[in-house]
Length: 301
Image 1: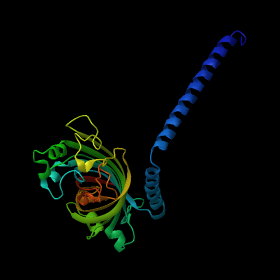
Image 2 (image 1 turned 30 degrees about the vertical axis):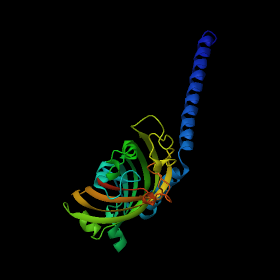
Image 3 (image 1 turned 30 degrees about the horizontal axis):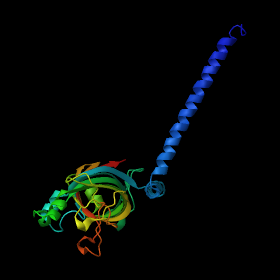
């Protein structure tokens, strides 16, 4: 009986082995994509991400803090080498958007036992905020220097740029009023100020609407000031972040938040443009932005 079914068994075994090897190949392809993905990511981003995750896990395991998660979004005003300093049209014209995911360590409450931590000033007035955010802004020159009919002014007016920035980092938020009292009362307000640092990845672009030449190289479209002043490769930099805002107690487990932030980058290339600071000291300042965001925060229990 077995000998009669032997050809069929061999066929089934062969098919099974073939399918098994296909699965193995798929697994190797998948793993190779993952490895390639991590190899292409900047090592500093991975280090920052691991530090964030590691700190959160250690803090939860050893100290029993509770967690909050949320999302933020709002308009961004990017201050760069595009436009005129202290000019309203520049500030209003070079406006983009920002979005982000945020996480808090709440030192005043233990989710694991549904109880408060020992009362200390730090526990009742500070929270640690981790963040992954993204902002993008289209950039253009505005102001009095673009309003004349000269070739230089028209070249300046025709310049266009943009920058997309991904940030990851932490801020320590200080609440002057009691966090415990705020948590216990719906409709309460909790103003705060914060200070922190972020690691940023920027990706700028630039072009001119006057022609198809390359800005920074083609004299027919590039103002003299901006020759050899472009870098479209993108890169990484650190930034310092400070903000002021307030929370509104919406429900027992959720808050609304408004936050006005200033973020200063330790680079003048975030917008992809940096004229020689020795010849043009008006452009020597590093890039920075102001972000007014709205947020929703949920308490994990």
